[in-house]
Image (tube, rainbow over all chains, first blue to last red; front, side, top):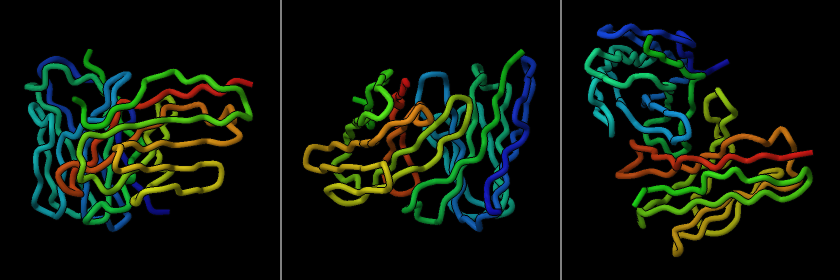
Length: 113
Length: 111
């Protein structure tokens, strides 16, 4: 079955540590996205990529980095510069124009310890 | 002004009733609108999309769009306890590469 796989499901980060969240899709979608969700809030866009080897900052990109070396993969690194990283991170993908909406992975819950 | 606004709820309805969820948006050129359902601790799931004024029905769900009033709604008929979730309204901002979401309305369907 086609879908988006995010791993790990739960992640704990120590202060000053970088961590990488994995996102893989087999939907043959061109575009991929990373969102952050805080309790009681909607989703906020961190980064997005419409084609391989290209990506753009979303609304809250500070403290995050991404790469898009393969069509299927769009990993997100939460750097030590992100001062409040505890949140639910969601990866999504879509056809190139996104006209039919986005499909989401199951999410990664990141906690700072 | 937030780009997509929803009442956070909770909206509480009895089983079998019609649940009405509302959403307003600020970008007059928005063309595509989506409703996602999100169960607690889970990721959002697309349940309805609507692109033109009027109603669109899919099973127990009806989406309504009024572009002149910048208003989109979701009706759930014969509400079931399994419909209890947060419903997120979304539309594109600045092109199709940026889907923006409201904060969501929490729906509680009680037996």
